[in-house]
Length: 285
Image (cartoon, rainbow, N blue to C red; front, side, top):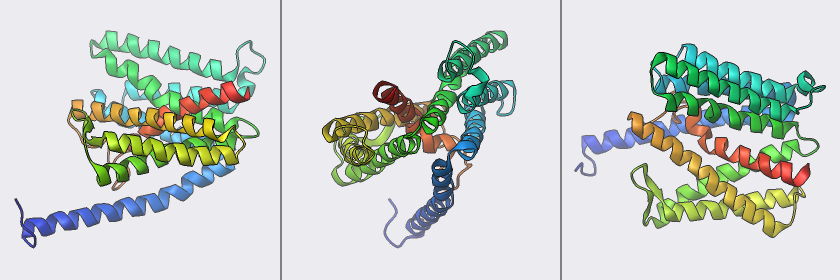
């Protein structure tokens, strides 16, 4: 065991400080870009999500397929871009009997069928091809649709961001402060039940406060819904941890210094956004 002041201990401390600096710099650069795109909406938000879809498809195929740049990545990217385009530009299906959201999910279904056919043709594992298409695209479709929702689109996207971020922050600090039994030791050994419950509490309070300020409903109802969605988003984190553990990697990629890949940062959002979409359809349609 390295002792305090030893070369090994000093190197570990320096690596930790360097990693923290990278995380802070990356967050300081990316956070304003994301928030500005969310605020302005329209083409700016669509382009941000489109770029994210391309990068997520790259990361997924890089890890689970035989090659990062290939037919699998192209299929996933085309499916995602077509799906979010149908939501962003509803005029494409305005005179059709189905709405843009239904058309987008039909495209995702077609993409999954194509992924299945390719998996059979290549005689390779079907699981990763079939799961990759909805994993990368459904959350993206949900975010684009939420931002398009008038007049509450901006607040709906901010709501899901606040819920997911406060869940992550609360889980981290409660888990560190309290510790206790592990939530899923075989998948993510650092996560605890205390962190999960504390994160849901933070998500409930922060999300409930924002939802109440946006006049989405009664305070108690919003606190409960926000807490539950926060817990659901944590399952996205666990699901991705399981994938990374299966393939024996720490991060999906190194695209974001100090943070890993795009999928490492948005795993909870990919689960949380569809849940908010469902609530929006129920509450506001």
